[in-house]
Image 1 (cartoon, rainbow, N blue to C red):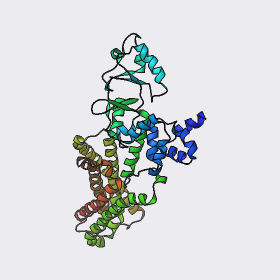
Image 2 (image 1 turned 90 degrees about the horizontal axis):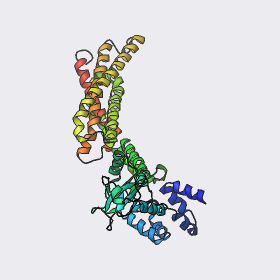
Image 3 (image 1 turned 120 degrees about the horizontal axis):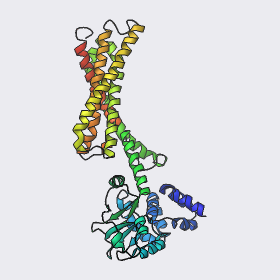
Image 4 (image 1 turned 180 degrees about the vertical axis):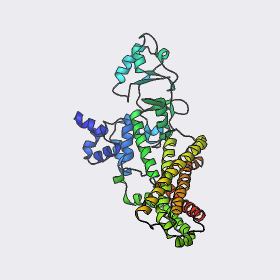
Length: 406
């Protein structure tokens, strides 16, 4: 039974909910009572609405009150992640009394790595690491050995900001307090691991050009899947129609120099790829706190230099490719093949430079207007650069090939 219990506790909240709901009503109580209140809250949130009252009824009165209190918080707030069961100490206890008290509490609390010192009104006064308590003089009071330079989070703090605070402070557990400074619970590192995974999944889905899914891929309903993906695809399709419009403006140039059309996919894909790279780098740097809005000018300078160097690199490859093919198959690109090669090389420099700068600045623009930078998805950047890439390509061609092919 112990092994089964450990296996059950190791499951995700979604899997726990599915397992419990598949059991006969008489067996559900045993498994529900294995869960601490924060895990029970997660399970109930994963269960269908009509099943939730029945699951709550399976708990003992004390746990049920704790779970109901946790359900009042938003799922993505610190209050929705915390456990209300933590090691509490009074400031007037001696170290010896505190150790004895923690021994009795050990099985009922989330963790005893830290003990939290509260006054009679539950205000957080300080924190005592277990190591300090064990190594302290047994006759000293908890007030004398506690740390007052602690970090605490508001119960309303967003889970993404909480995860960042955990990372900055290198904590194993963090106290959660209300506006009056009363301690409500703790959030532990294992809860934050789940948050980081969830937030990373959302960002990756947005960067891929869709809205974030509300659950695991195979469990998202088909209509919701289509809705999440269809909106962005329609917007990107309309954007790509501008590419066809742009090509229409250069119809005469294409008719007079058909060889230019051969390199259109090469030009626009290079610009889109460079822009997508820059967007992904900046979005990730923002998510990790490495880049702030005030750093936009530093990013521009770096990306202008990077875009120019990358453009020169791709332009050189493109030019060498044209010259090599012309050597293997003379006449392939006509008598003005050298000018065509220079046109492609110069266009690649301009398109890659433009794509890199636009891709790096779009997340800053979205953040400044209060939007999620991850919404600057790679497909969106690629679509934007496709249109401008054509304009750059044919503008360069009209300058270099004027009087020859054009």
